[in-house]
Length: 197
Image 1 (spheres, rainbow, N blue to C red):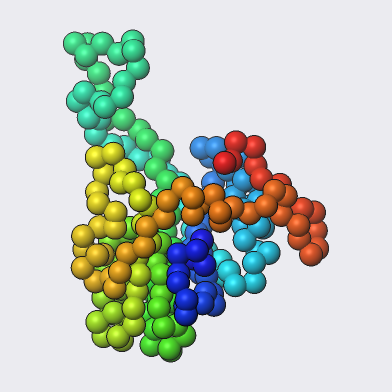
Image 2: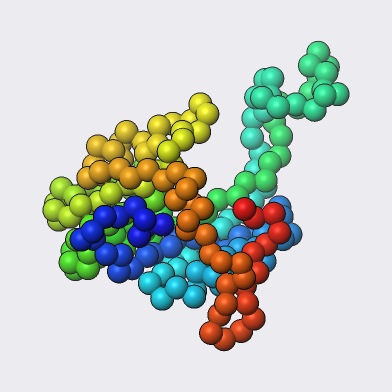
């Protein structure tokens, strides 16, 4: 996808992918599906995967009154819970890893232009350091369509420190798909999980 977005003379030399291994507590099939994707990524020598971690916890949270989505049998005039227990999944460390590598690689002159595919505003300061203090360009990659009612993509604070924005649309995504199956030099081929587009 980066090859499609960049114009000559730019050449993609490395892709850093930041993720965490998912839990099976909500979706029992999620780890196997993720592993298929990670195995496919491992066939591309320019891609390096960096791992944070997922935390799964059961937390108490206030219930919105009324909830945005409710069971059809819910009756509002009956006494009900003000708090509910929810499953909370958090990815930890991926944004910190991305930020640290971006700043390190800029200071070590490992790139001329970096592309960041994230709308995480925790990255504002690292992107600012790279663009304003180191003097490198950082492009922001964003989807063409904004989520309904969601924040602007990329966020205004990231736009303020980024060098430019590149937008990804459905045709970029379609052209960037792995073949199915992905043939590996060693090991079984990687089959796309059922239900994946």
